[in-house]
Every structure is written in structure tokens, then in C-alpha cells.
Image (cartoon, rainbow, N blue to C red):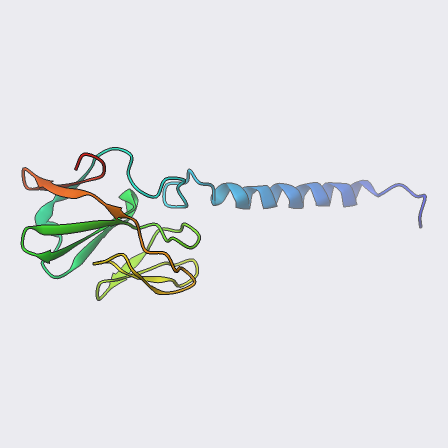
Length: 142
């Protein structure tokens, strides 16, 4: 069969598969709303709304803002990036102050940022957070 030209149908199938693979890459791009971000922590202050939304002794996931905030004591808050340190996926849920990464199953203590279960081994980066006029503000200058 050598020496014969490749059938047009074979070439078109290959091009279609390559295009579909490219779409998969685009869906996981660093700029997607809830996918990976090149900078896992805010580069500007982020208003998270009413501070009372974070229960004392608990935590709240702000998935769209890629943040998780805990409240160890009344009026005291800690914030961390909600982007997994393994492959960059955003945590999808909290269970008993543990954040879950939906991509590979990593788990984090959202009160300390510590990686509890791999494949992630690095802790979630801390993010400054403060209360201003009853609202939580996280990020630089917070």
C-alpha cells in the first residue's frame, strides 16, 4: 500500500480529532471562570459580602472568587485560595472544614490551608482578609 496517497476521508478525520482535542485544552485554559488560574490568590481586593455568612467555627467556600474563609472565633477570619495546589482545580465543596478538589481528590483543612490528602502536598496559599463595614474583603490591602 505504500506509494498510494492517503485517502481524503482519513485526513479529514485526523483534522477533526485534532480540533476536538484543541477544544479540550481550551476548556481547561487558565482563564476559564472556575478552572485553573495562573495567580491562585486575588491581585486586588475582593468583596465577599456579609461577614456573618461565615459561621463561627465553620467556613464558607466562595467558589466564583476562588477563596475559602473560616471563622475560628467571633470576629476572627482566615482566608485561603480555593485553588488546589496539585493541578489548579477549584475546590467544589466543604465537609467538616475540609475542602474537596473534584479533579483528583485532594483534601485540605480550610482552617489552616494544610493538605490532608494527596495528590496535593503543598498547603493552600493564605490570603489577607478583614471586615470592613460588616463585609468581608479579601486580597491585597485587606
